[in-house]
Amino acid sequence: MELKEYLQIIRRKAKLFSATAAIILVASFGYLFFRPVSYVTSLTLNITRSGVSDTKDYRYDDFYRLQADEKFSETVVQWLKSPRVEEDIYREAGIDTKDYSLKQLAKSISADKLSSQLVAVSFSATDEKNAQKIATAISKIISQNTQSLNRDQNESTWFEVLASAPVVRPNELSPLVALAIFLGAIFVAFWGVMIKHYLE
Image 1 (cartoon, rainbow, N blue to C red):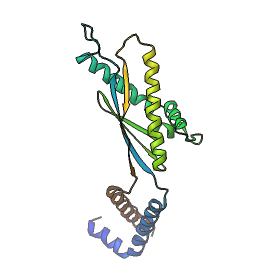
Image 2: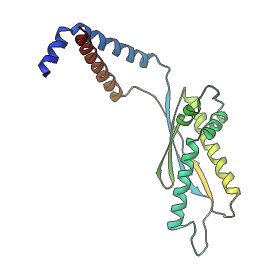
Image 3: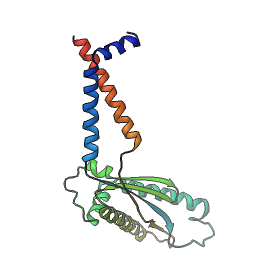
Image 4: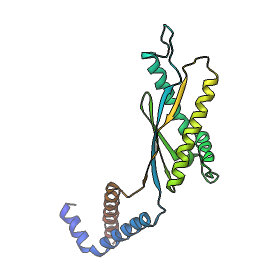
């Protein structure tokens, strides 16, 4: 079929096309409008050292030090992807996670290594107060895990994690999401008309 034939079919069934698209748009935007407000939070974890090595081989300084920092940053990222660590964080923040599945726990906090000494963390919370509590809990739990590693080392220059102040913003509808919903409604309405035409 040529494009003009598709357009003719849509024109003949304009009411069905419009009704389908309108229902999808109203339902989608209605859900987004009436859903509970959430807050997106971002903070940065800085990987640093508790001292400076003065040994001649520079095991943790210069190139080798950066290598060690990068490996430890990867460890921090994996901690924050672990359901065990995330449950500890939420418990520390006073948030009940008994209704969370392991998959939900694993995805509730996002962590990405930005550089050898910088880890970006983001998550959503129901309100600003909970966002602050979770950010504080993240800093505390990661510091505790780091200290646990430090106790097993004989070095005086082991790792330390410092958290920046969190940035909290309302989770608003982005223009890209709105555009995706609109295009999705047009797509579904188009194929709804085509299927109706085919059945007839």
